[in-house]
Structures are given as structure tokens and as C-alpha cells.
Image 1 (cartoon, rainbow, N blue to C red):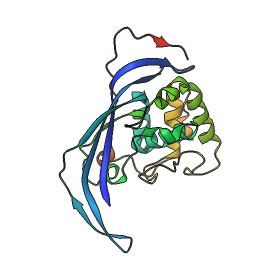
Image 2: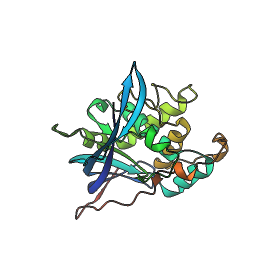
Image 3: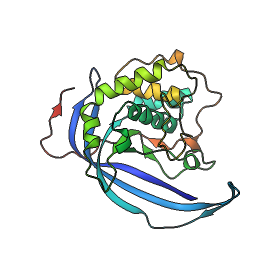
Image 4: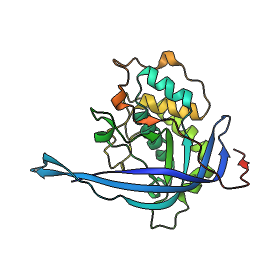
Length: 239
């Protein structure tokens, strides 16, 4: 079984849109994809018997997509509260897609448990960003539809996660049937924090469950997102 990950990076902004009642913005533009196959598992009788490492050149291509950055204060809040930022972002991405009718034709950067939970310091640092893109080899046009309805989708995602009676996340709120990483890197509490932050809603820290231990440095795989270079003469579109 192949072991790989795909970095999905926003490369250039073509459009910027307000998020209703929020100081934050959504972006649409060019996305660069880089898939790295770093090994494979040997399987026998449906059990892993060995993990083999490989050193292969990356597979790179481009697409179009949309993204929203997680505010820096929210990253600090999650770190201080013991919420794993990778779990939170991954779960929030799924919650967003679960409310989008065309989600089957949209991709996101699913988090790999083997990378996120390494016992040693990870060299793969990812920006604190929810990102969605059109699959390569298609006519595209789906990501821009999500961008055009971003405020509504975010609000519906928050409402669904907030009202779902499950404890740790389920298929009705943050789990995705198409997650190739099996929804292992996920946090319902984290998704709520991220969605509220992007929507500009207050976050009551007293309602965040206490975690037994702070996030270890080895698990801190998320770094603050940097604003992506924009094309000239872009005007911010109203929500």
C-alpha cells in the first residue's frame, strides 16, 4: 500500500471576497499541487508487516481553487488550549465540503496521520489554511462555485457541527466518505473553533474541553499562513 502526501499550495490570488459579518476574507486563484510518494506498506493477510521508505521525485501540477486563512490569534488559542491545529483544519474542511452540493467534484488537502503524529519533529510544515481545489484533468469550475457561496457554506457548516449530538465527530458533521486518510486526523472541537474564527464569531474559551496535555512541539505541523500574491487591480467583492 502506497504511503504518500500531497501539498496543496495557493500560488496566486485572482479574486477576493468578503465573508459576511467577518473581518476575514476568502480567496480564489491558482493552486500548485505536489505529491510525494515516500514509501509503501507491505501487507499480508490484511495486516501491515513492514514499512518501506522510498526517495522519489515529486509529481507536480497546477489547478484552480479557493482558500481561507485561519487567523493567527486562533492558532495561538488552539495551541494554548491543547487543540491540534491540523486536526481542527482538516475537520473544518470536511464540515465545509459536507454542506456543498458539488463536493464530490472538489478536493482538499487531507491530513496524513503518519505525518501529523510523528514522534520526531516534522519537516513538513503546512500553512494554517482551509483550501479546496478542482481535480486536475477536469474542466474545473467547481471551486469557484464554492467561493461564490462561501459565507453561506461556512455558516451552514458551523450550524451543523454545533447542533450535531455526536461527541467526537461523525459522518453528519465532520467526517468525509471520500477522505483517503480515513478521517483519522480530526477534531470536532477544533472545527468549531476554526469555523467560528473565520466567520468572526466570538469563541468562549471556557467552553473548550480541557485536554490532558498541551500540543507537543513534534506535533506542531501548522504554521501561520502568509498572504498569497494577488493579480493586479483586484477589488474585494461584497459578501
